[in-house]
Length: 277
Image (cartoon, rainbow, N blue to C red; front, side):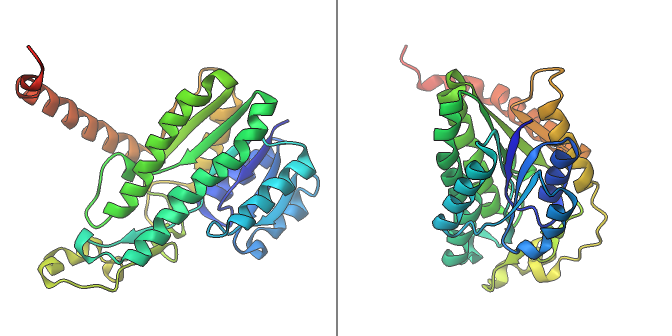
């Protein structure tokens, strides 16, 4: 039996991961900013589930969650950094305070949580850190640049962490979801108040107030949670470092990487001209 600490469990993919882990008989520190939205899990799983309030913009809140999880369950085997929200703005229209809050929530807070659990995992000589990023980390989308930048930064940090901790028995995994039927496209999405008329022609494609959530995304968050937990617990084959989640995520990654490889080939002769001869 493993102990999981999962962020952002009130709905969506985080809820799916938490429920799947609990159904597998695991111990889970289930966290959310509003614990009223997750308290029924404690009623369903009174021994396995610990319900904790977590504010990713409050370091003391993060420390309390880590300390409480260790106190109740004796350690932390799996950290899942999942919580976050989107932000739609053209680069020039972005608002510095909102960009800072975005990076604090989906880059700096997960990085801080990793630092908090690493001493425990080092002492155990085992552990797994799962960072849920996005297909947006594979390519920057129109009006989504800062979100992609923050998720991309988390991916590169995770790559470095892998090299630093593999010899300690600590593993890492990135999860890159496509579009899922969650609150991400509703209350989980924020936007800019700044408007520059030259970008109006693109407004229907990215400005929050022009986006209509038809809830027709391909991804099922409950199935997504099951896939992640099954991949971690199955033991049938080596875990991927990057787990694409959803057929739309697979297609996007294939197209992006194919184009990148082709560009490398097309410009290889020019790229090599900067070498010493």
